Length: 120
Image 1 (tube, helix red, strand yellow):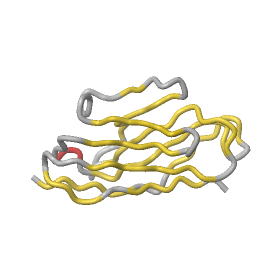
Image 2: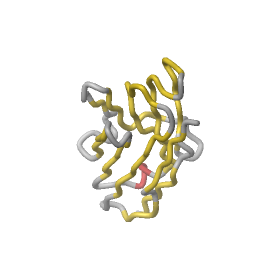
Image 3: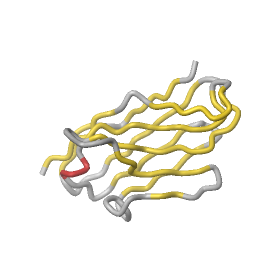
């Protein structure tokens, strides 16, 4: 059974930092993409950082220069370092994995989400 377990969310003041972690467990052959999304109240889920197996990363302008995604393929873990946080970063953050996982050649999996709240 494939599971994504996130940790590291919480309450932080504006200008502060948080680091999220997401560990993948279960049968894994290869991980192509590991990403973080967030869902703010009343808004659609949006991508905040993505990393492919080759090491290329992608960020929207809203977090570029403040957020950094990294991954440890051996540990099957992806991280999101968030610095200089703003109130608009508040939301539920979800980990996403795509690859040959759980016996599915092109499987997509989501974590349960972790709450991040930035107070101004």
